[in-house]
Each structure stands twice: as C-alpha cells, then as structure tokens.
Amino acid sequence: MMSKTVILELINIAKCYDFPDVTETHYVLRDVTLQVTAGESVAIVGPSGSGKSTLLNIIGTLDSPTSGRVLLEGEDFSKFNDKELATIRNREIGFVFQLHHLLPQCTVLENVLVPTLVNANRFSKKETETRARRLLERVGLEWRLSHRPGQLSGGERQRVAVVRALINNPKLLLADEPTGSLDRAAADNLAQILVELNREEGVTIILVTHSLNLAERMERVLELRDGILVPQGGRA
Image (cartoon, rainbow, N blue to C red; front, side, top):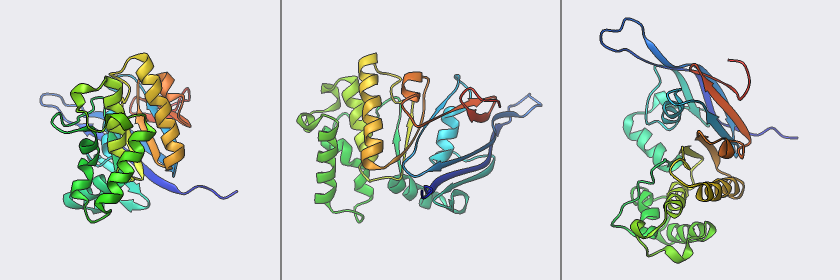
C-alpha cells in the first residue's frame, strides 16, 4: 500500500510570551511536532488556555512561532514575506471560526465568493460561481443564495462560512471551535457536513474544539497538555 503524502509538518514549534514585571517566560506551546497527511482529518482538544487556537493560528500563518518551523508541502513558511503569506492563506488555507464573520450586507452567494475577489486570475468567474452553487447545494442551502446572513439560522450561517472557506479549493481547512456557538442539533449537522466534505473534497481538516462529539468524528484526536501535543489519553 502506498503511503500518503505529508502535507503539513510542524517541527519543534514553541510559542512564548514575556510579561512586564514577570521574570519567568510563559510558554504556551513547547516543542510541538506533528505530521499531517493529505486528506486526513485531525482534531486538537484541550482545556481553555491550553494553546489550541494559538497553534491553529501558527499553522494558518496568522501568528508566528517563537521557534520551530511550519512546512506546507515541504515549503517553510519562515521563508516567505507578509505578501507571500497572504497569498498562501488565500489560495491554500481555508478558515472557519466560531463566529461566522459573514458580511451582513451581502447575500449568501456573494459572501461565499468574497475570497475569490483577490484571486481573480486563478479561476474564471463562471467556474467560481458554479463551484459556489454546487457547494451551497451540497450543504443544503441552494434555496438561500439570495438571502442575507440576518435571515439565516446560526447553523446555516456557519455552513455558509464552511463553503466560503472551501471556495478556493484549499489544501488545508482550519476550524477553530466551528460548532461552539451552535445548539446540539446544528452542531451535529455541521460535524457531519465536515466529515463528508473531507471525504468528498479531499481537503485536509485540522480543527480545535471542546466538543468530544465533534473531535471523535475526526480520524485522529490529539490533546494539548501543558503546551505539548500528545495523542488523546497518551502521556505528555
């Protein structure tokens, strides 16, 4: 059997902060090393303040590690300038947050197409709109295309946010507590959609969550404990 390609690699990632009047350096992350293969789904769990969101932001180039390296398909993020990193975020990485961050004045379809406005030369307008409509239909929102966020339920808004994150066909989908603001039924629905999109679109998913129900739907569950990433239930 052929081994899967490693799409993401974290090598000895550390993140620390120095605070005024405090002599000891505070480490949020310590020596985090991880390999994620293409098409894999990974959940990262841990208590509040354990560094889950910080780690996700480092993976997504929204933050920089104090030390260590992040490689996407073998390319070291530290070698890129801010403009190049912005292009990588737009083309290669999709983000879903606890709050949907949809533009209230735009329709569902317009919100989904926003990331394509700075990526106009990659796909034609027809191609992106066709993909947007297909994905919205896939998550059960084909009848909501002309609605605005204020006319949607919380679960529907979050489904729009997922489609927006996928519109540029990214290699990585990063989700930070994607079901945290939803009721149980909407959370279960979104979790199932993420699992199915992972399989159908082939996108690699890394999410952080407090929800064990969501985490257990992923192929691998890791835990951040005292700044160190370990298999859930394993030793740090």
